[in-house]
Length: 427
Image 1 (tube, rainbow, N blue to C red):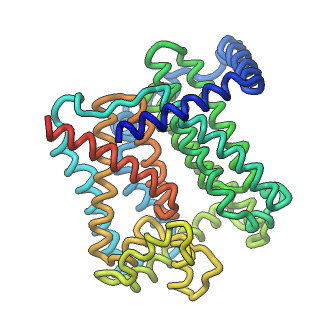
Image 2: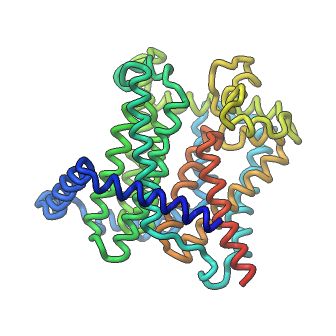
Image 3: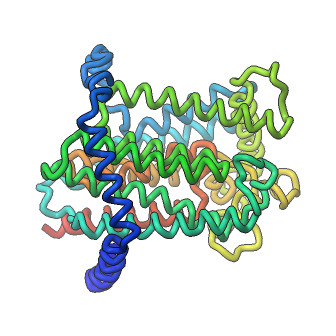
């Protein structure tokens, strides 16, 4: 496996180096370097609030030390359910209780029995390899962005109706900008930790990465991937001491506002609501609809499930129906629509209440082990990979973890964590 990794990273490093040497990219990085220097030494930067702004937040131990603990998934899931206009059924309450208990066991209890020795067993990754992989993924996503808008003959943000004409085979590679952002930001964090760049330079580069994500993802009219980029930057920055706690809190409020605002104006553009409707109604109605779907899926799944893994397998490219289309078929016999089933929707349809408990326990364990390794090592790569999987777990509260690329991120994380645990046991 190490030979394969070495060969692939050698090729990717060479590709990255060649692009960096090209006239186009040399010019781009020279311009960005100039802007960065101007920004770092700018008078206006001094007007920005410092780390001690809203210092009372630092006195809250939960916010300061546990704001991105894996248990935030349960908290946000519960909050999402509370937003619903109607209560869940009795059966679903039992399913949710099993889900929350399973996740708590997996994230807060099970990790205590692993990786309690030294950090020598933790696999280390080279900064250059991680940066080159992220850079190449960024190039791929940009290329497919232009292919996507060319295929529909316009920009979906400006013409919302053409968003539904976008082809998944073109848009899926665009979403590689998310792991690309994660890896490049992690590499910049490593540079900051090694003293190669200042905190101000690291902050500028994080902001620039986020600006790139906004430029491409917002133009396509997608808000979930944009929120993913936003979360990843905040989580990496927070654990890398690049982003302050008050910025995390303010960023969370901005993120919530963005979700409400984009949903509201998109609904206005599609004429599904009127301007007199409360902006919060779009969020409440979405939560209510998703909970209604989950109620139906819970009824269908029962205690031991109905599809027995077929819904999860339908995420594989080439399947007749994708997971969310399969949900549409199960609850309404409509295969032309995609329906979000929440984090546990797939689990309950495939394997019932038993599957929800086991699945949430496994998800909690992955996040719990990742959180533990990140805290023990403070390593740039493990901060990045934890930020990636936690981000998609949070977003999966509504959408579910069903996209093939997201499942692939979790598989990579599981493999790396398994290797670390195995090496720890062997030592």
